[in-house]
Image (cartoon, rainbow, N blue to C red; front, top):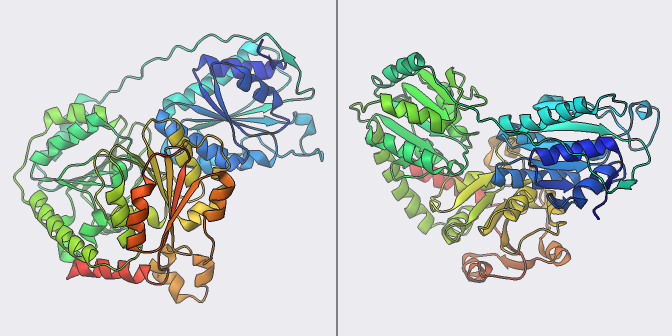
Length: 555
């Protein structure tokens, strides 16, 4: 017979999670969370994962929830263990990832009296959380507790973000029972979307007279309906659609490499690039250039579509449509008509010219980060899930075309390097697609505990671009002008080879174009182990070659 916790509060938490159809729980070891660990690990309807490092565990859960689009729970013991969740919680907050944080705590009378492994856990994430629930061990009505927990979990599902439930336990912690409380299943009510007809008529009227309209798509989960809806607008010559690889939409008439297009522009061209109406959707934008240009040459109107929030990224937001992009376009398309304009064609012609310069430069480019990304992004098999780390990796990736069958993901909520590997592994665990993760050396070594993980699938492949430090700081003018470049760039002589031996990954390495092409032919073959390919590039040449690339676009 399964053994469940005897502690009633732990039983209520477990039963509430079951009632809310939570199926995946990531647990980090500890004693104070023993009642929860016993309950979740013994229930046949819940798949549990044991990950020691709480920071890695939380990002692992973020990766799973990213792909499942369902709530994933994380469970930890009391004390500083909980604080290690914070980077992933902030990522979930800004990336709309449904993450349920359940922390065990000491009873209130043991807080701040010198008891071990004890901190002030209540509301510790208050700046980056949808809501915090602080349970007490001395409750009088368990139905009230059930309702509190159900409401909190329901908030995760409806608002897509992190929620924290803090659960105090007094000893004994390890007593068990064969019985389990039952909480009534939660009946989910469909959230109906609505746009006032008069509002839609007013905005569509403005749209139908504007000769320069721009649709800018940030990070977005793959969505076939959105793909078709955006394709509708390419037949309107007054509409220019800008995307990034993390938008997961594509079309020959979409501008899919924003920096490549706008980097060489002079102010007179930027004025023509300035839209009358800017319509944005999706998550955060990678391109720093488009942010700078649209802040300097602001659109007359900026509208944003998102059911949850609207960031005033360009400091001129006029209206927020609080619905999903799919619903908005299903209504908006019925009311708009094409406008005569040369806006779209002008910039598509520019795009074609930039692409020609890009190809000519890359063909003659010396071995470098830039050359490596060209090779890698062409090599990735179709239908792959591609996970990218932040910093230089995500920026280089935006300069290249990626096959439309490849789905692209990155932790862009806070744009941190801290949990990229853990997120990628979590994502790989719950999808059937082969997963390739491309990361930089600093990101990889920073999150190396991600490999302390027995759930890494054999079809998971890591590519580490090792340029011996944080190469992005050589592209930024400030660090090189200072006398402290080593503190920004953090040069090192580390390699991933010994980590691969320790964690039982198959290791490959390359240090030039010939060895890279040779290793790639072996790297993508099926294996009984996860694989890692480490590519060494010239630290002191990469920035010079990238700067030459952008200067070439100007000529």
